[in-house]
Image 1: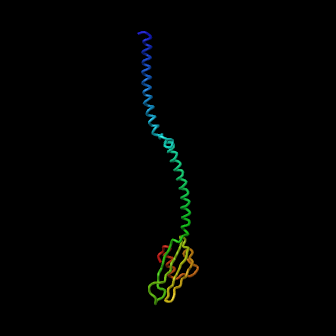
Image 2: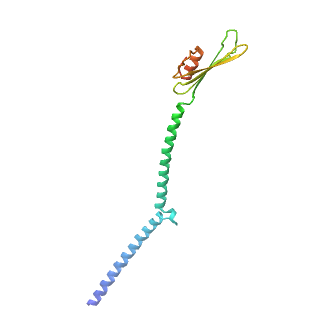
Length: 159
């Protein structure tokens, strides 16, 4: 074999190796291209990066909403403490000669036991209503046994 043939044979081997390497690179590139196509959509709005960015913005907005909602809930809990939420009615016969338990004492209290007691005393000729203020479950004015019972029931105590 002469040197031209050896050089030709070496060139063929190198060309064959280059062809194999090119085919291998083409297969790898095709795989990478398919994986990239999965990340990228047909337009700029549907790319993986754009989708993740939109989701991050959405999560940030939700976090801000949660902070606002916590403040609203805290304010509502504060307001609710002052709301009339504890109510009890005690019905009774104010006079021995009257039946039907037309008289009543109604306690309207908030969480701190502040509020009022409304008593309506029914007689044959008329009905009289009385309001008494309540602070901390007690009143500056004397409460009747029925009014005391209504306050105790409204506060969740056995009377």
